[in-house]
Image (cartoon, rainbow, N blue to C red; front, side):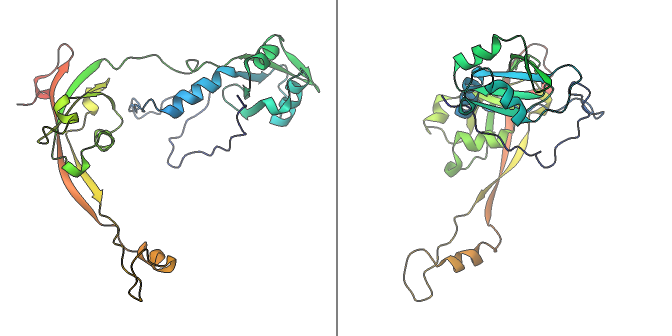
Length: 259
């Protein structure tokens, strides 16, 4: 397994301001809304690769140390430069990703690495270090009215439901398309108040492929395609009502249930 290539990360546009004081602090606008992401193949792969990683921080008087200097210090232990990648990190100084477990073990055996006037301390990277363990304790049975048959897809429904919940399962009649009157499924959430009650589903219309100017069929020339992209994207809009039919949790307000 190869180490990671050097990452080129940039702040996402529209990111909330966070004042760094050694830990993440919420702004004064109340609790941060939850965003439940999907357990994707990419997430699993990243966690697998990060098993061979450590975090490092500069000790002592904490002189300025670049990624290149930190790499030199690690290479001095006998690890090949091609078998490790170093990335700026917080709250520690560096995230060090090794290509193999033995390379990580070699560095972990050192209490600290001293090199060129600075000291590096290492410890195992842990995905729980800056996280808070929690549970999505509410299992919600939902029924979506207004989902068009040509949008009868779980990925479409996930987009409709938003990021406050994660899908557990789809009912058999919905999965088999036997009953297209409503899309039925169950989800997990920790914030019942964040469950949406309605959304407008907008499905883009297919881009019209016109014949060439000379009458030939097939894809139009590149300049014509470029011109067509400047036109307004047409969509079909559907009103989707999201009902909560049952919640497997105690002491719920009556208004959560479908009349």
